[in-house]
Length: 68
Image 1: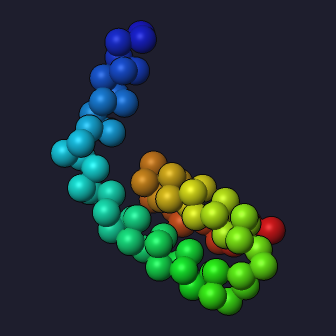
Image 2: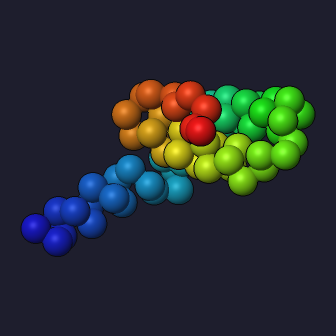
Image 3: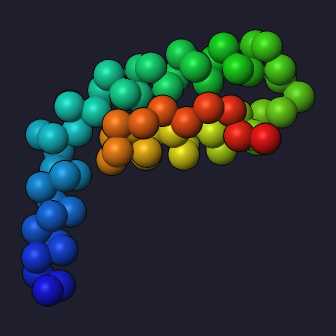
């Protein structure tokens, strides 16, 4: 079981596979910059939304709205 999980992680996170995630990262980077420009006082909240949304968009294909 442990070996199977390791293989799944390796397949999803391999160096060559990371190029597939660039569009997700670019989209989230633009949204992060926009959010910081609109409301710079909630910097920590913007980074929380950024990291959560990046992971969920890569894994599930769903972009998170702003987290309050």
